[in-house]
Image 1 (cartoon, helix red, strand yellow):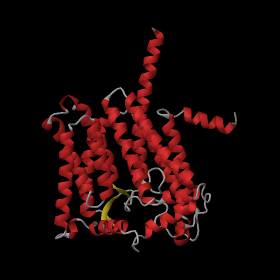
Image 2 (tube, helix red, strand yellow):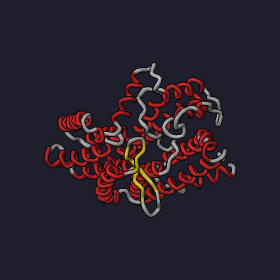
Image 3 (cartoon, one colour):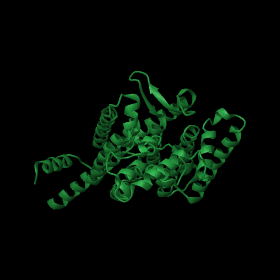
Image 4 (tube, rainbow, N blue to C red):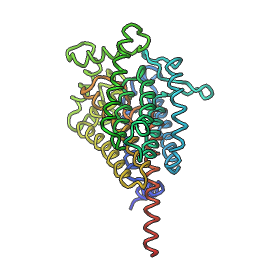
Amino acid sequence: MSKKKTIAYKLLDSLSGDKVIWIIVGILSIISLLVVWSSTGTLAYKYHGGNTLYYILKHASLMVAGLVIMYLTHLVPYKYYSRISQLLIMISIPLLLITLISGSNLNDASRWLKIPVINLSFQTSDLAKIALIMYLARLLSKKQEDIKDLRKGFMPLMIPILLTVGLIFPANFSTAAILFVTSLILLFIGRINLKYIFIMVGTGLAIVVLLLMVAQYYPKLLPRLGTWESRIENFMNKDSGGNYQAEQSKIAIATGGIFGKMPGNSMQRNFLPHPYSDFIYAIIIEEYGFVGGVVVIILYLILLYRAVQIALRSPGTYGAFLSLGLMFSLVFQAFINMAVAVNLLPVTGQPLPLLSMGGTSFWFTSFAIGIVLSVSRETQLIETSNTTSDDAE
């Protein structure tokens, strides 16, 4: 066995929790570094005099920080996150409201909030998404005895969902939709009456329709409405000249072939808007081909499969709901991003988790995966303890 393999095995052994998840995170991180390095060349020449190391070093440092967050998070027993979820939901909802009122504006959307002391901006929706899933997992696990009851079981779950999703919706429709669908999946898994789930869907749709109607007379209520309409129109009208992003993405995919142009040889990175974030999957297919695109899909599916296995082995319902909710949200977002890249959905602006260039979004993703690994770690400790007890007998 070579020295490099020995070091790799020692590193893997030092990590607790699901080893497959750790391996996939490592593989996706390596792919991310390669593709971000390739896709930021134009940015480097435009803003940093051709210094191509600037963005890759920045991305690598943010990625290392995210992996540290993941490692530290997975060391905390997952039961503590039940209490932490109460604190996070109480923090995230006011932050969403503050962001809507006075957050940093980007493309007619107030999504970002700046932390004064450290001068760091982050999307409050990223925090709210994790906080809501954690909080729903807590409520579902505690209310299993009354889960079929409308007042005791359903209403305490419905209120935080509609409140959080409603505050995200005006500035970030896609994130609100992903979170709403994830919440519905959790409610279904948590044995909520299907009739109540349909009530939730109906209520959500009614609120959206009402907001759209009011926004016709008060445009400031939904400043992104015009952007949403143009994106849907461009998507439906395939011959539209405004469908530039999708056309460039399709060119990247079509020229990738089976095995791609190899790393660093992308041409569409010079024409495709945001090739390092929103459309990074198109660059992956262009440089690594159909094979590379399929491998990325398989890696995300394995992540979801491992989360299901962790949920099935979890000794408590809270750990099961937690791992399923967090990982489903991450993988669902990944498939939304990839569907946009291959022109199956209108442009959404969703990054590809663990692959797209970005700071705080990668950190929140790392935090979520760390929690799933924490559930796995605790489950393994319990199973090891039970095995040791059986051997002693």
